[in-house]
Image (cartoon, rainbow, N blue to C red):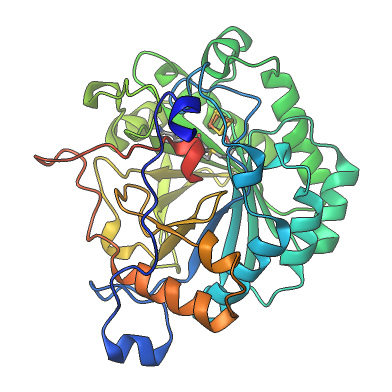
Length: 357
Ligand code: SAM
Ligand code: SF4
């Protein structure tokens, strides 16, 4: 049935258990992969639905999973509790578009009760109002990241294929600031022949609003499979484009797991620029992330071609320890790197919106 519904069928979820981690890792009960990386950061997708169809992510005719196959709020919390018990310290709520999930408020509230260092969310900025931000902040949300790839309305309509607008998204960002969430971030996917003439304008936006603007290299995770290497704008080209207008100084980051390089403005203006360059400067060696899809598939890597289904455990009353053990075993299989550009690289069957970016 799922195959009939999905133009790009999702991978067959492998039945549990994943290959077991060595006894010593299992005894330590911590998320550690076979390449020595400790995992502390969970990307939790709570829906595969979206009201946009960004060209680098989804196709207009992509279908969504049947609602019954998504996890319930209670099941997400059981997974998160298990993940925390084996070392997860940060959770980012993502999707699809998280604000399309009817239980989002409840999920934020429940996650806010957990012992975490950071609780963040990534959103396309659809009609966010100050009262919602206030509520999420009071419930424990610490950070918001918005996606915005152009500052020109005609281009926005082209790239998102949505009824929203640049104006609406910027209004949402301003509402996040007014709602007291510090330093919202804006993610910009850098696309050759699309927005490369706007990078310096985005730097102006960072300065004007005192926010972090982060440019992300386009990755082969579009469900339309149109990605080509020549559509990627490399880190150096992004920097050169901004530097033609503003002098930048690199900031050394205390977080060694950060996927981005960060820059401030040399003239002391507020705001920051970040560059995430998975294609031209892979950071896999420092990766500390684990992903859970909206229907409970464990993906140790964004580019995993293997994933493991938590649902049978969840729906047969597994304990927190059982779930934690399953996560320990799944993480052990995390691949060394994504392999983009290497011979034999295979784009994952899921697109970004079905994984959780
Ligand atoms: N819908 C929300 C949003 O757009 O912010 C959250 C989910 S979206 C999949 C998470 C992030 O993935 C967004 O910042 C989006 O720009 C990014 N993204 C999606 N497809 C991508 C691709 N092919 N390459 C790089 N980034 C991508
Ligand atoms: Fe939706 Fe986000 Fe993908 Fe755009 S990037 S289609 S907003 S999930």
